[in-house]
Image (cartoon, rainbow, N blue to C red; front, side, top):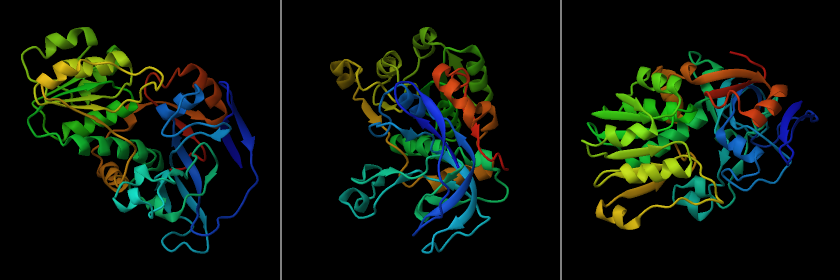
Length: 334
């Protein structure tokens, strides 16, 4: 089978791996589609994602597909089942898993390396999908589940004033979740004009550039700020424009070598609450329910559909990733 590896030093290659059968609780899934995540690009550039990166590693984790075989201990899946994966595994036994935080599991690791013809996750990380949900859309389950967790953390009240930074793929998912809270104002901050237009078509009340933002919020108290870019400049601006009593979610993945700065005294005067969001504990099922309901427009976020062999060039240039979500076609099945 094929697998797309980051091999270190800005290099990518597709390797051939021996076929194997699933063991224990493993479910062998023929991957149909896998999304390119921003963390894959971070890894390719030598930076940490959700955990340290030690190449060579298979990239990708936002995947869906069809079950081809199951291990002898699998009870809930059989060949032919259409499924999506949660790539983050928790042991279920450590103190963090016992507290309900598998994202902090002391043994946590990825179990669905989606840049491959097949993945072998344990059945507890596999989810049935309805016949009405196509496999390409189902591959959005993982990024959407992460966005759902972020919204869960800040618990936006209805009728609030919200500012969202960034209309990349995850920003586009986050925007659609935030529209469900019936905000009074939902202002998107985005440099690219086409993405600002997309934001308004997906429910933003206004879309502005960073230079226009302070004017746009001058007469309102911003109750919630969600930053989905991860640049110091946008994270710092997110804290700066937050109103009194606001909650600020720093969802974008920042550079660990370049910490952001903010004025703690000003944050104190406004009694800000600053949140971060790590992975997707217990949210995959709800993400799939949202996708199956048709309430999330994923097609509008896709910028390209590429083959596994084309991903080396895309990782170097991010030509399509700058415009939206890149979907990697494996089997390409529906």
